[in-house]
Image (cartoon, rainbow, N blue to C red; front, top):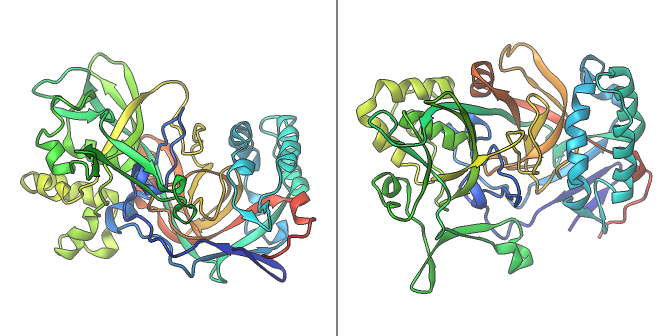
Amino acid sequence: MPTISPGSWTYGRSGAIPGPATPTGSLSGRKRPSDAAPLAAIGLGVTLLLFACAEAPGPADRLTLTPISFAGLPGWDGDPVAAAIPPLRLSCDRRAAAAEARSAGGESIVGSRADWDRICAAADRLAIGDDAAARAFFERHFKPYRASNGGDAEGLFTGYYEAELKGALRPSARYNVPIYAQPDDLIAADLGEFRDDLKGRRIAGRVVAGRLRPYEDRAAIEAGALKGRGRAIVWVDDAVDAFFLHVQGSGRVVLDDGRVMRVGYAGQNGHAYFAIGRELVRRDEITKEDVSMQAIRAWLEAHPGETRALLAKNRSYVFFRELEGPGPIGAEGVPLTPGRSLAVDRAFVPFGVPVWLDAADPARPEDRVRRLLIAQDTGGAIKGPVRGDVFWGFGAKAAERAGRMKHIGAYYLLLPRAKAARPVAAR
């Protein structure tokens, strides 16, 4: 249960049920909205996912929120915060911050629906691109809180992006790697619907002789296990590109006729994620210090005879669907905004909350990324009270930035001032 300490709020999750070891799909802790496919179903922190296995927070993990002033936010005056207004409006449309927040003393830690109705109405009245007005809006309606894990304010921050592949709607000698839709016999269950202490835990498989059994793993699927059961929505020309699409969870496929298909996460086979980067480090193929998406891709391309066996060690397999309209879509169910959308552990940080980030810049590690983002995505590798994954967008520059982002930093939650003014009773 939440506890309140003087000058700060502290709350966490029960450690009775271990978290899933997979950073993918329904088993990742990522809740998939019925009308949208999340982008980073697996791809949260590209480098981290390729190197480190996902771990659930332990029972001692506690998010402590300590109030500070806006003057105490590192670099607050240097960010064009008006860029965070459009993604905030998208979150307002979903009302996710109010509807899906954790509770503290019977009321959401991010305030009531009425609080957010007032905030969202004020955001709608702002002129696009007016930094002075946007800064005044945030300072008027929000109160900053330094986030820490029981006093430790530092955590890991990574990046992800939208991948690009080349493909065709029909298989051929060139386009021979299928991107599968979710099979009809894949069953995903939210265990929280059965027991309150299993909230946030999910499992997937298929029914065999009346029992839910594990689904086929990556090796079996790539060997043809889904023939007659699975449906490829598109065929691509490179198995490594397809694997990285699985890591990212969403991407654009440039078809052979020039059209562009956007694909997004639809489901996952339920098997635990295996980090191939960690395996390469274990083999002394790559040093721990040099691990990055770029280094792992280079190794795979230089060792084609070993690629399939290495990829098969990751038994997790992701299924996709074609996306229409704006995208990519985050787990909150809204389009993600490059450089302004953040994936968080929703056990601690609700969707729709503005978050001030202070971390090293992957493009220039000697500099800092100090900017306002909106919590709009999540994923299995994003575990803990101080943990985030920045969506950098689409294209080579975004891929480079995401692939190299693996830095220690801190963040601050902006919560409604109206909430801060009301007392919260500990339970």
